[in-house]
Image (cartoon, rainbow, N blue to C red):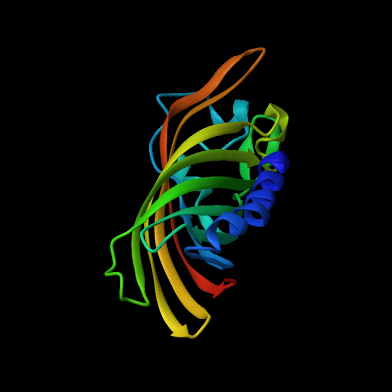
Length: 206
């Protein structure tokens, strides 16, 4: 995931050069709720695996950064990096009490299309793209903190508060195939559709 984050920073640094002539660039922090969806088609007992038995157990508060570069008033690119963490309750296992934690991090790049009228200072858009998601923390460390490619869909909007200041809201969905395994076999697998609902503040850089 470190490589993906470096790529995110490079995109923020490079894209403004191409966008400044006809559009604009906005960047800011976001906070929201990360809500994993889906179910595992195959799952081994918790005491054997040590990870959550259902995707929804990784639900948590998400913090991150987003940036958008508008090539013109209608089309653009959006980049997001988000992390959420959760501590799981202690459970009794054959080996004794066991507690674990999870950190889920994602990086995405999306093409965006603005539906708002050309004269509007506010924007309403749809987005589609891809990226990567990583599950780490004590729950997933024994399995190498797996990283999966994702497809990403979303909608969002910004409302102008001041000349260069906007508030943003959005919902994104991450679609990917989950497969938790090691040399001893497969413990969990299934198609996942995680949802991120978020809001934040953005500043116009150009």
